[in-house]
Length: 140
Picture (cartoon, rainbow, N blue to C red):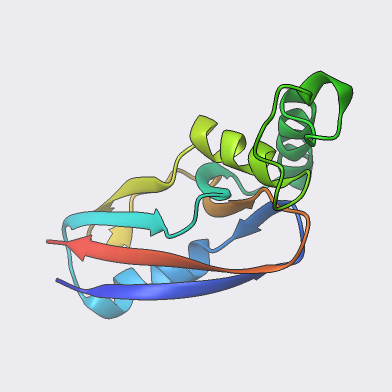
């Protein structure tokens, strides 16, 4: 079964698209029909399948999650105990728990069966730059 690990460098919160890299992996694997499993190896970021046509969608999603789960130094987050790694760490864990750390995408005729406007994204929840690893596994 083909498997690969992608590394994505982030520069802060937001959505980082890796659709083209996943498409290349599937094409080079030569599998006509199967299932691509995408898994992120971290607890403070997540994965999304989301619209890739209008960048406002990505900005609005990021803004929504920032409002939903503000940094732990925000007065509304006084209940947070885990603050050792900074005010963005526990909120990042909460955001990752609310979203997905793995995705499944069917492969049909050797291509990802994504819809017209769908893209694969790493959703970074931390403020500082990180190097994130995403495992791609293709089952036939």
